[in-house]
Length: 117
Image (cartoon, rainbow, N blue to C red; front, side):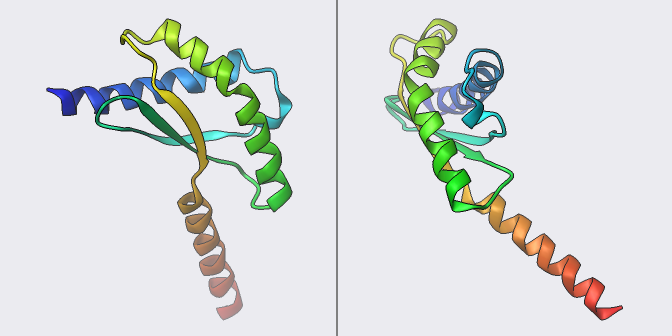
């Protein structure tokens, strides 16, 4: 039962945070953020929200991270209203590097294919 709840909570957090980022967070630094997944601890105390951005420039990553940090309080407050659980987990955002990695691989493969022609 508890395990099912974690998975369901993760989906709900991802859906709601997506919505909050779109509608409530006015910070331009978080405009291009795509949420890629949420991991909630078994005790539901902590949620890590993974995201990716289109750029792999370090300064863009830093800017986005700062924007998300600044918005965390607001996002958690909104989540508190939206989620039907007793205690809203602490949330933290983490850059999902696997997405960028996959993207780089794709680009390399495309480049290889072009070179081979």
